[in-house]
Image (cartoon, rainbow, N blue to C red):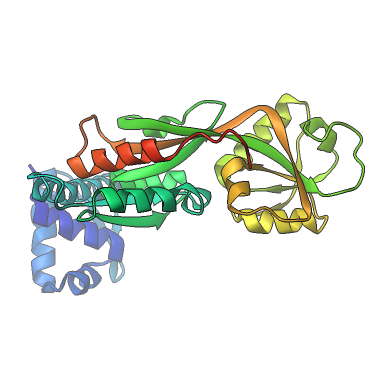
Length: 300
């Protein structure tokens, strides 16, 4: 069994890059940090660090343990919070990580509804794309991750989590308003010869996949995760793009046209670490989330 304090010290060494820096960050004496490291290596049975000048370099075993240490320490902190709120829903907190267009649209309404229903539970919001949100969830830095995946299947990095489906967004082709096009404006084939503006990594991967199914590779001229910037670039005639419904609900540029793509969606979920039941405050939040976010009948 690993000692929690030694794991905390080792995580600091891995983050800071040296025993001295870790001691400073933790407000420990340097010999104390060295002692904890030596004891942890004895417990692990393998070297965890290699000396590198004035700093250290993690061994392969050290990198593995450092990643797990962050996750373990996060889960311990979450357990302490959960136990503190075990007596009921009069106390506690929920930390939500959500992608930008969700934070700009559905999350404020959910936060307001949750605050009215449970005024004594603290709700903290942070912005994160799905991969970062899920990493934070596994490390215990957040309690709920608001994520999305496209119609080509859910990602495998959500295994071992409880997933609640919230809504699905249609995907739109975004082009400059006006002008003439050689084919239907709701068909990707119409834009195969155009320059493209790509979004986040997952959205870009989905765009490449969708175009490949139609026999072409989009010529990506610009890349940005900012859906406001995407529309500004399109409005300026610098390319075309695809955006999901929530992004267009959050902001719709007056000089772009949006056309719904057939049979193309992005699915939005709430993800909680581990198997149910979740801690009472988290269960309450997911319940409010599911009840508050209603599938729109009209987009955007």
